Image: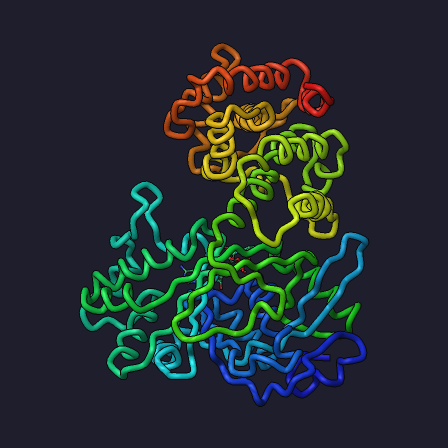
Length: 492
Ligand code: NAD
């Protein structure tokens, strides 16, 4: 059966469907970047509230600004905003639910004025974002908003019709100020460290270039709460579409698949109210940073601990690496002995349970996350996720054996040849340079970590260099499996 508002109640025998009357919903949220993640996360939390009879004035109007978003407009419009969310349990069970919280979808290139007016109307009180890391238009080298990007320059031309999220949102805020309306909250849900602060920097920088008076008003009146979001949501494949049709009898142009785990820690402080998200399982807190550090240093750094050792051991999927006994023991030791001491207290989280759940999540064979994905962009990931643990541990005279080993496994991986002599495709903006350096480390073992741009002065700290060299040497002489086994041995 094709999924539409008309057919959805008839599907209730096969799949969970909205229990609420969707005709009573009004859009209080405009969301930019309706992709897989938003539909597995924020839209799901709102659907939960609505199923409990709450938040009827917080339905979502989705917006796409990129040309390729025309596909999402077609899929969602034909289905009255409905779609199937499928949780993939580790034992192969699929758990499906039709989500009803998205009530409208606007494709900005067709009608930018409609998008602006939607946001400028009194019903909308939150503009939320999952526009990807790149969407904030922050220059990778300067760390500042990139005013020279062509799309930004075009939006800043006098009399231009806004086409970017910055142009559209700024114009809507200008109209709200003119009309004496409270500004909406801008809520970033992207996987960006300090995403609230980054969103504030980007939007106020754009506004400053367009209208400095408006920029000051935005900076003073718009809230940009930060958040920590977590739910592995791979891109939907044709196999997923077929599975939804076969298992649940639903013909859905664009279902979403994800892991069962989900987490959302959201900073308090909205300009004009918010849905009662805590009633749907969201942790609303004063300070997101401790939760962010927990995720970066356990989940993200933990991924890196598996990635290179796993790949060099001959695995290709994350679940294969996470279910290797020695690698799992190594990962747990890294988390317990080196990462946990440099976390802040995380209210409401049982860290031991969190770590156990992480290993379970990594071990889920249904998610089919690849080690190659985790190995990509290492030169961005290792400095953000692993090196801060090394530095803080050194500052507190703590252990760094395992974190140093992870760095060594990256250095070995960066040579671009695996243990059977097969080439490795290195996906990294610095790939050529890193590979050239890594290939000299047989002669000069500290070559890789001498790169100050990435490692600062870590190569001068013997407490880091000694375990790093031990692991690198072992990787070269004994290989990854034996190295991990030795690292995981108790008493090392
Ligand atoms: P996706 O490819 O399904 O969707 C990306 C969306 O971002 C699209 O709607 C696209 O139009 C929009 N977008 C991209 N660049 C943009 C720009 N410059 N301006 C405006 N919109 C833009 O990806 P996804 O899986 O939904 O992930 C989106 C983001 O969500 C990620 O980048 C990440 O920050 C966050 N996130 C994802 C996951 C996950 O597992 N997929 C987990 C946590 C957080």
